[in-house]
Amino acid sequence: LPDAAEPNYKKAIDLKATAANPRLALAAFYQARGRYSDAEQQVQQVIAENPKDAEPRIALSKLYIAQGKQADAEQYMKQVKRELPDDPSAYVLLGDYYFLIGDLDRAVAEYSSIYNDHPKDLKVKKNYIQLLILKGRVDEANKLNEQILGSQAQDDDALVYRGELQMHQGKLNEAVQTLQSVVSRNPGMAVAHYQLGNALSQLADLDHAGTEWQQAIQLRPDMIDAYRALADLELQKNDMPGLERMAGDIIRLQPAAPDGYAMRAFSLMGRKQIPAAELDARKAIQIAPQSGVGYLEMGHLNAMQQRFSEAENWYKQALNHDPNSGDALRGLLNIYVAQKQLDKAITAANAQIALSPNNSTFYDLLGTLLVNKKDYKGAETALKKAVELDKHNSDAITALGRVQSTEGAADAALATFNDGLKNNPKQADFYILMGGVYESKHDLEQAKSAYQNALQIKRDDPVASNNLAYLLLQTSGNPDLALDLAQTARRGLPQLSNVADTLGWAFYQKGIYGSAIASFQDAIKLSAKNKEPDSALYHYHLGLAYAKSEQPALAKQHLERVLKIDPKYPDADDVRKELSQLKS
Picture 1 (spheres, helix red, strand yellow):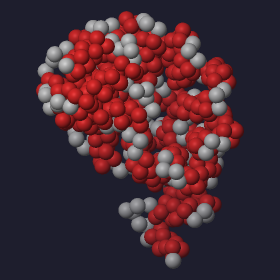
Picture 2 (tube, rainbow, N blue to C red; picture 1 turned 180 degrees about the horizontal axis):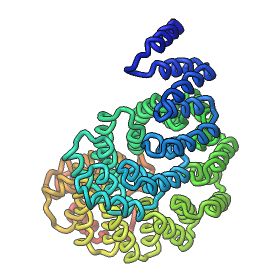
Picture 3 (tube, rainbow, N blue to C red; picture 1 turned 30 degrees about the vertical axis):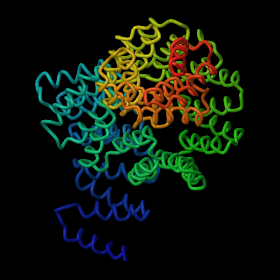
C-alpha cells in the first residue's frame, strides 16, 4: 500500500540522509494525498534548517498553489525574492509563475525588474526577450537579442529568437535561413525545429513545416505548441482522424486545458459522431468555462444539425468569452446567411468590429458578406482594411483582388496580388489569380508566366497546370508539355469538366483522337453531373474529334448541337464550315 512508504521517509529523516532531502520527499508524499498541513510542517522545518536554500521555499510556493492559495503563493514568492536576492532560482520564481498562469503583462513587468537588478544573468535576459516577443514588443526584444549576438554570434537561443523576430518583421525568407543554420549546427534543438516549422508554414510550405514540427516532438515529446501546430495542419488538410490523434496527444499532455477536447470534438463532428463530439465540447466548457472554445464547438454542433437558434446562442456565448474569435463570428454569420438573413449578418459583423476594431479576420468576413450583397465598393473598403491589419491574411488579399477584377479594375487587382506576394512569396494562388486577370486582359504571355511561377512554388498544382496547358494549346506552345500538364491537372481535379476538356484538347492536338473523344465525353458527362449549363465548347471539341476519327454522323450531331446551344458562338463560322465539309 502507498501509505506504507510514510515510515520509510521518516526513517530516512532520522538517519539524516543527505542525497536528497527526505523531509521534502515526505512533504511531497503528504501533498499528493491532500495532507497539506502535514506537508507544510515538513517544508517549514527544512526552511528553518536551511534558510539560504531556495529549494524548500520553491516547494512551499508550489504547496500554496496546489491548495488554490494563489494570493498566498504570490506574496510568499515576493518574500523569497527579497530574502534571497542573489539566488537565480529565487529571484525568477515570481516571474516564472506569472508566465505559467498566462499573465504576460505581470510576467513582463517582473522580468523587466529582474533584468534591471541582474543585467549580467544571461538566462534572465533570454527569458525577458522571449516575453517581449510574446507581447509583440519587437523592437525592444530585438535590441536586447542583438546585444547577445554581438558578443556571442553563435548563441543558438539568441539565433532562434532572431528567427522569431524576423517572422514578426515579415522577413520570412531570412527567418528560414536563420533557423536552418541553427538546426544544421544543432539538430537536437527542438525549439529551433518548431520555429522553423512556423516560418515555413507562413511561407505556405506546409509539408516541410509539418516535418519540422514532427522533428520537434520527437526531440521533446512534451512540446505542446508543436502538437497544436500539427493539429492545425491536420485541420487545414481536412484530415479528421489525424486531427483526433493530435487532439488526443494534447489532452494527454494538458488534461486540464480545454483546447484538446475542443479539437477532438471538431474532428468527431467531421465524421458525424455527434454524441461523442458533444461530450468533448461540454467537457471543454466544464474544464474552462471562461474560455470560448467549448462554446464554439457547441455552436458548430448545433449549426451542423440546423438547430439555428441554439447555434446562435452558443456562438454568441463564445464571442462573449473571446471577442476576437474569428471562428465564432464566422459561425454566427454563416447561420444568418443560411437563413437568408444577410442584413442581420452584416449588422452582427459591424457590431463585433466595433468591439474588436483591429481584427483583420472580422473585416475579411464583412467584405465577403458585402460581396454577397453585390456592394463591391463597400466590400473593397472592408477587405483593404483586413489586409492593412494583417498583410499575411491571404484570404482577404484573394477576395480583394477578385472584387477589383469583378469591378473591371484589372490593374488594381494585379497590384493587390503583387503586393500580397511581397509578404507571402510562397502563395501560389496569387500567381494563379494573376494569370486569370492577365487572360481577361488578353495578355497571354504574362498569363503563362504567372502560371509558370505558381508551378515553381507548387509543382503539381492542378489549377495552374490546367490553365497553363490550355494557354499552350491556344498559342501553339509545346504540345508535349501541354499534355503532361493536362494529365497532372486531371489527376488532381478529376471531377471538373473543364479539366477533362483541356486534357481532351491536348490529346486532339497530339493526334490521339480516341483518347480525345473519351476525355470530351467525360467533360460533357461531368458538366451534366455538376448541373452546369450545356457547353457549346465541349460539343465543338467533341465534334472536331469525331470528324478527325472519321465518324461524320457523330461529328455532325455535336457540331449542330453547338449552334443550337449558342447561335452566336464565337467560332460559329468555323462550325458551319466544318458542317459543310462533312455534308460534302
